[in-house]
Length: 271
Image (cartoon, rainbow, N blue to C red; front, side):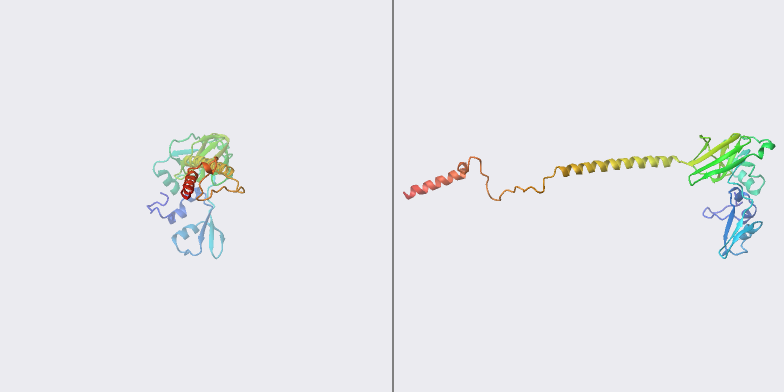
Protein backbone atom coordinates (compact mmCIF):
# COMPACT_ATOMS: atom_id res chain seq x y z
CA UNK A 1 0.00 0.00 0.00
CA UNK A 2 2.81 2.43 0.82
CA UNK A 3 4.71 1.73 -2.40
CA UNK A 4 1.65 1.67 -4.60
CA UNK A 5 2.60 -1.72 -6.03
CA UNK A 6 3.34 -5.33 -5.13
CA UNK A 7 6.74 -6.26 -3.77
CA UNK A 8 8.42 -9.43 -2.59
CA UNK A 9 8.27 -9.52 1.19
CA UNK A 10 12.02 -10.14 1.44
CA UNK A 11 12.67 -6.60 0.22
CA UNK A 12 12.18 -3.50 2.38
CA UNK A 13 13.18 -0.79 -0.09
CA UNK A 14 10.43 1.84 -0.56
CA UNK A 15 9.84 3.00 -4.10
CA UNK A 16 11.29 6.39 -5.15
CA UNK A 17 7.93 8.17 -5.34
CA UNK A 18 7.27 7.23 -1.71
CA UNK A 19 10.61 8.68 -0.62
CA UNK A 20 9.82 11.90 -2.47
CA UNK A 21 6.12 12.51 -1.75
CA UNK A 22 4.59 10.10 0.78
CA UNK A 23 3.77 11.35 4.27
CA UNK A 24 4.24 7.89 5.78
CA UNK A 25 7.93 8.45 6.49
CA UNK A 26 6.95 11.69 8.21
CA UNK A 27 4.36 9.86 10.31
CA UNK A 28 6.98 7.28 11.33
CA UNK A 29 9.02 10.12 12.86
CA UNK A 30 11.89 9.62 10.39
CA UNK A 31 13.95 12.69 11.21
CA UNK A 32 17.14 11.85 9.30
CA UNK A 33 17.98 9.71 6.27
CA UNK A 34 21.55 8.41 5.97
CA UNK A 35 22.96 7.46 2.57
CA UNK A 36 26.33 5.88 1.87
CA UNK A 37 28.58 7.77 -0.56
CA UNK A 38 28.91 4.56 -2.55
CA UNK A 39 25.33 5.01 -3.81
CA UNK A 40 25.40 6.58 -7.31
CA UNK A 41 24.09 10.15 -7.35
CA UNK A 42 21.91 9.46 -10.38
CA UNK A 43 20.04 6.56 -8.76
CA UNK A 44 16.28 7.31 -8.60
CA UNK A 45 15.90 6.64 -4.86
CA UNK A 46 18.87 8.89 -4.04
CA UNK A 47 17.44 11.70 -6.12
CA UNK A 48 14.02 11.25 -4.47
CA UNK A 49 15.54 11.59 -1.00
CA UNK A 50 17.65 14.60 -1.93
CA UNK A 51 14.74 16.47 -3.52
CA UNK A 52 13.38 19.08 -1.11
CA UNK A 53 15.53 18.02 1.87
CA UNK A 54 18.48 19.81 3.43
CA UNK A 55 21.88 18.22 4.02
CA UNK A 56 22.45 18.03 7.78
CA UNK A 57 25.89 16.39 7.64
CA UNK A 58 28.28 14.89 5.13
CA UNK A 59 31.77 13.41 4.99
CA UNK A 60 33.64 11.08 2.58
CA UNK A 61 31.63 8.10 3.88
CA UNK A 62 28.01 9.29 4.23
CA UNK A 63 25.61 12.12 3.56
CA UNK A 64 22.72 12.78 5.98
CA UNK A 65 19.52 14.54 4.92
CA UNK A 66 17.18 16.12 7.46
CA UNK A 67 13.45 15.56 7.12
CA UNK A 68 11.93 18.74 8.50
CA UNK A 69 8.38 17.44 7.87
CA UNK A 70 8.67 14.55 10.32
CA UNK A 71 5.81 14.25 12.82
CA UNK A 72 6.35 14.44 16.54
CA UNK A 73 6.89 11.22 18.47
CA UNK A 74 3.22 11.36 19.52
CA UNK A 75 0.23 13.57 18.68
CA UNK A 76 -3.52 13.83 19.38
CA UNK A 77 -6.15 13.11 16.71
CA UNK A 78 -9.86 13.91 17.03
CA UNK A 79 -11.01 12.55 13.65
CA UNK A 80 -10.82 8.77 14.04
CA UNK A 81 -12.09 6.52 11.26
CA UNK A 82 -12.36 2.79 10.69
CA UNK A 83 -9.72 1.19 8.48
CA UNK A 84 -11.19 -0.85 5.61
CA UNK A 85 -8.54 -2.84 3.86
CA UNK A 86 -5.82 -0.41 2.81
CA UNK A 87 -8.07 2.55 1.99
CA UNK A 88 -6.95 4.63 4.94
CA UNK A 89 -3.26 3.92 4.36
CA UNK A 90 -3.59 4.87 0.69
CA UNK A 91 -5.23 8.16 1.62
CA UNK A 92 -2.43 8.90 4.08
CA UNK A 93 0.24 7.93 1.54
CA UNK A 94 -1.07 10.10 -1.27
CA UNK A 95 -1.74 13.06 1.01
CA UNK A 96 -5.51 13.21 0.49
CA UNK A 97 -5.91 13.28 4.29
CA UNK A 98 -3.64 14.86 6.89
CA UNK A 99 -2.28 12.28 9.32
CA UNK A 100 -1.85 14.95 11.98
CA UNK A 101 -5.61 15.31 12.18
CA UNK A 102 -7.02 12.00 10.88
CA UNK A 103 -6.31 8.44 12.05
CA UNK A 104 -7.55 5.05 10.81
CA UNK A 105 -7.94 2.28 13.39
CA UNK A 106 -8.72 -1.43 13.37
CA UNK A 107 -11.74 -2.37 15.47
CA UNK A 108 -14.20 -0.21 17.36
CA UNK A 109 -13.84 3.55 16.90
CA UNK A 110 -13.14 5.31 20.23
CA UNK A 111 -14.95 8.42 21.38
CA UNK A 112 -13.41 11.51 19.79
CA UNK A 113 -14.77 15.01 19.32
CA UNK A 114 -13.13 18.08 17.78
CA UNK A 115 -11.98 20.62 20.39
CA UNK A 116 -12.93 24.25 20.37
CA UNK A 117 -10.48 26.21 18.18
CA UNK A 118 -9.40 28.38 21.10
CA UNK A 119 -8.42 25.29 23.12
CA UNK A 120 -6.83 23.21 20.36
CA UNK A 121 -3.51 25.03 20.64
CA UNK A 122 -3.20 24.00 24.28
CA UNK A 123 -3.07 20.30 23.49
CA UNK A 124 0.25 18.55 23.90
CA UNK A 125 1.90 15.14 24.21
CA UNK A 126 5.31 14.88 25.87
CA UNK A 127 7.32 11.65 26.11
CA UNK A 128 8.58 11.55 29.71
CA UNK A 129 10.29 8.15 29.75
CA UNK A 130 11.39 5.83 26.96
CA UNK A 131 12.95 2.36 27.29
CA UNK A 132 13.05 -0.81 25.23
CA UNK A 133 9.92 -2.23 26.90
CA UNK A 134 8.40 0.83 28.61
CA UNK A 135 7.09 4.22 27.54
CA UNK A 136 5.49 7.06 29.48
CA UNK A 137 3.85 10.23 28.21
CA UNK A 138 2.16 13.29 29.68
CA UNK A 139 -0.95 14.33 27.75
CA UNK A 140 -3.13 17.45 27.75
CA UNK A 141 -6.27 16.96 25.64
CA UNK A 142 -8.86 19.68 25.02
CA UNK A 143 -11.49 17.05 24.15
CA UNK A 144 -11.69 13.23 23.86
CA UNK A 145 -9.34 11.92 21.22
CA UNK A 146 -6.75 9.37 20.21
CA UNK A 147 -3.07 9.73 21.07
CA UNK A 148 -1.06 8.27 18.17
CA UNK A 149 2.48 7.12 18.91
CA UNK A 150 5.08 6.70 16.18
CA UNK A 151 5.82 3.27 17.63
CA UNK A 152 5.28 -0.07 15.92
CA UNK A 153 2.14 -1.91 16.98
CA UNK A 154 2.73 -5.42 18.32
CA UNK A 155 0.86 -7.94 20.44
CA UNK A 156 1.95 -7.96 24.08
CA UNK A 157 1.96 -4.20 24.68
CA UNK A 158 -0.35 -2.93 27.45
CA UNK A 159 -1.44 0.67 27.97
CA UNK A 160 -2.58 2.43 31.14
CA UNK A 161 -4.22 5.86 31.32
CA UNK A 162 -3.89 7.29 34.83
CA UNK A 163 -3.24 3.77 36.11
CA UNK A 164 -6.27 2.12 34.45
CA UNK A 165 -5.66 -0.34 31.61
CA UNK A 166 -7.08 0.58 28.20
CA UNK A 167 -6.93 -1.04 24.77
CA UNK A 168 -4.15 -0.20 22.34
CA UNK A 169 -5.59 0.27 18.84
CA UNK A 170 -3.67 -0.57 15.70
CA UNK A 171 -3.55 2.83 14.05
CA UNK A 172 -2.70 3.69 10.44
CA UNK A 173 -1.80 0.10 9.74
CA UNK A 174 1.30 -0.12 11.92
CA UNK A 175 1.25 2.36 14.82
CA UNK A 176 -0.18 2.41 18.36
CA UNK A 177 -3.17 4.50 19.34
CA UNK A 178 -4.41 5.09 22.90
CA UNK A 179 -7.83 6.73 23.53
CA UNK A 180 -7.91 9.51 26.14
CA UNK A 181 -10.69 11.72 27.57
CA UNK A 182 -10.39 15.47 27.87
CA UNK A 183 -8.00 16.82 30.48
CA UNK A 184 -4.49 16.07 31.71
CA UNK A 185 -3.45 12.43 31.78
CA UNK A 186 -0.47 10.11 32.10
CA UNK A 187 -0.10 7.27 29.62
CA UNK A 188 2.12 4.31 30.40
CA UNK A 189 2.86 1.49 28.00
CA UNK A 190 4.66 -1.69 28.97
CA UNK A 191 5.61 -4.78 26.99
CA UNK A 192 4.04 -7.56 29.05
CA UNK A 193 2.90 -10.47 26.86
CA UNK A 194 1.14 -13.45 28.45
CA UNK A 195 3.78 -15.79 27.01
CA UNK A 196 6.50 -13.87 28.85
CA UNK A 197 4.68 -14.13 32.19
CA UNK A 198 4.12 -17.87 31.71
CA UNK A 199 7.80 -18.28 30.90
CA UNK A 200 8.87 -16.34 34.00
CA UNK A 201 6.59 -18.41 36.26
CA UNK A 202 7.87 -21.65 34.71
CA UNK A 203 11.47 -20.55 35.13
CA UNK A 204 10.87 -19.52 38.76
CA UNK A 205 9.17 -22.78 39.73
CA UNK A 206 11.85 -24.84 37.99
CA UNK A 207 14.59 -22.86 39.73
CA UNK A 208 12.99 -23.37 43.15
CA UNK A 209 12.63 -27.10 42.50
CA UNK A 210 16.30 -27.39 41.52
CA UNK A 211 17.37 -25.49 44.66
CA UNK A 212 15.24 -27.79 46.85
CA UNK A 213 16.73 -30.87 45.18
CA UNK A 214 20.26 -29.54 45.66
CA UNK A 215 19.57 -28.83 49.34
CA UNK A 216 18.16 -32.34 49.86
CA UNK A 217 21.19 -33.93 48.18
CA UNK A 218 23.54 -31.81 50.29
CA UNK A 219 21.77 -32.84 53.49
CA UNK A 220 21.99 -36.52 52.55
CA UNK A 221 25.70 -36.16 51.84
CA UNK A 222 26.32 -34.57 55.25
CA UNK A 223 24.46 -37.42 56.95
CA UNK A 224 26.66 -39.96 55.20
CA UNK A 225 29.83 -38.16 56.33
CA UNK A 226 28.67 -38.00 59.96
CA UNK A 227 28.02 -41.79 60.03
CA UNK A 228 31.36 -42.82 58.53
CA UNK A 229 33.83 -44.76 60.83
CA UNK A 230 36.76 -43.00 62.46
CA UNK A 231 39.70 -43.29 60.09
CA UNK A 232 42.20 -43.14 63.01
CA UNK A 233 40.78 -46.29 64.73
CA UNK A 234 42.53 -49.65 63.94
CA UNK A 235 40.57 -51.99 61.73
CA UNK A 236 39.82 -55.48 63.15
CA UNK A 237 40.73 -57.86 60.33
CA UNK A 238 40.29 -61.61 61.07
CA UNK A 239 43.27 -63.89 60.38
CA UNK A 240 42.87 -65.92 57.24
CA UNK A 241 42.49 -69.73 57.71
CA UNK A 242 42.07 -69.69 61.53
CA UNK A 243 38.86 -71.16 62.84
CA UNK A 244 37.15 -69.22 65.59
CA UNK A 245 37.55 -70.50 69.15
CA UNK A 246 34.57 -70.59 71.48
CA UNK A 247 34.55 -69.16 74.99
CA UNK A 248 34.67 -72.72 76.45
CA UNK A 249 38.22 -73.09 75.26
CA UNK A 250 40.01 -75.18 72.69
CA UNK A 251 39.16 -78.50 74.46
CA UNK A 252 35.47 -78.15 73.72
CA UNK A 253 35.73 -78.25 69.97
CA UNK A 254 35.07 -81.54 68.11
CA UNK A 255 38.46 -81.31 66.42
CA UNK A 256 40.23 -81.28 69.83
CA UNK A 257 38.19 -84.26 71.00
CA UNK A 258 39.17 -86.25 67.93
CA UNK A 259 42.80 -85.41 68.51
CA UNK A 260 42.63 -86.68 72.09
CA UNK A 261 41.06 -89.93 70.92
CA UNK A 262 43.77 -90.47 68.33
CA UNK A 263 46.52 -89.74 70.82
CA UNK A 264 44.93 -92.13 73.35
CA UNK A 265 44.77 -94.84 70.71
CA UNK A 266 48.44 -94.40 69.91
CA UNK A 267 49.41 -94.69 73.54
CA UNK A 268 47.34 -97.89 73.86
CA UNK A 269 49.08 -99.37 70.85
CA UNK A 270 52.48 -98.69 72.30
CA UNK A 271 51.52 -100.46 75.39
